[in-house]
Structures are given as structure tokens and as C-alpha cells.
Length: 148
Image 1 (spheres, rainbow, N blue to C red):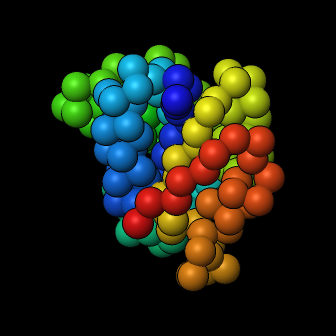
Image 2: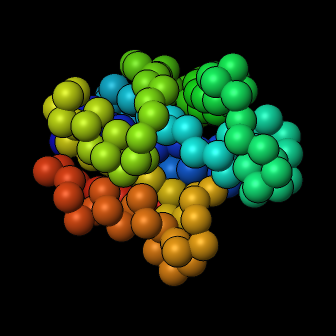
């Protein structure tokens, strides 16, 4: 039923929960798991160990910090998948709008399911339902699951 699952990661607990759900579903359906990380100043600050938002508010991260943060988030995602007994098929580190990058990945790989955390490390505007998960659910051409 779900042969290809795309999971949006940002380093948040909600994204980790989304990945764990993806791994559970993936084991049941022998699915490919595709991880997508899209850098934002808030998530870069979080991923490199700063207090969320503080690093981004004081200085913009360098290209090296952005890359290192993405590698850290994707490596953590791969480790979680391995811990859950699931291998990740591909990892994608993108720039731009996270929802658009998740949707593009889903289209490119022919995903049957997109799983995102309901609220990640995004802006204040995502207090009730994350703007990324909301946009993904609105525009996706496949099933979507938003995880708490």
C-alpha cells in the first residue's frame, strides 16, 4: 500500500516521532523511506546546539553551519531508522521552503505517503498546525500523515 514514504525532518521531537511512525509503517509495507531536511535559521541554530531561535536572532548561520546542521539532522534520522529496524533509501538536504521541498521530493520519487511532524522548529505562525505540515497536506498528490 505505501511503497515510498517521504519524511520531513527538522531536528524537532515532532519530526522524530514522524520518522518513528514512518519506520513502523515502512516495516509493515516494506516501504522505501526518503528523508528530507530543509535548512532554516531556527533549525540550524537548534541542530548545532544553540537555544532555538537565539543563534538565528544574533547571527545568520554560515554555509558551513547550514551544511553541518543538515548532515547532523539527516544522520540522526538515519540512526533512528536503523534503531527501528528500517533502512533509509535516500536523504535529501534542500534549501528553500520546507513544504515545497518535501512535496518536490514526494513527486520526484513517486511517494505514496508523506509524514511530517505536526509542529516542528518553524516560525510562531505554526502554533496550532505547523505551516509546513498544513501546506504539505493541502498540496500533496498522495496521502499525508501529520504526527504529534
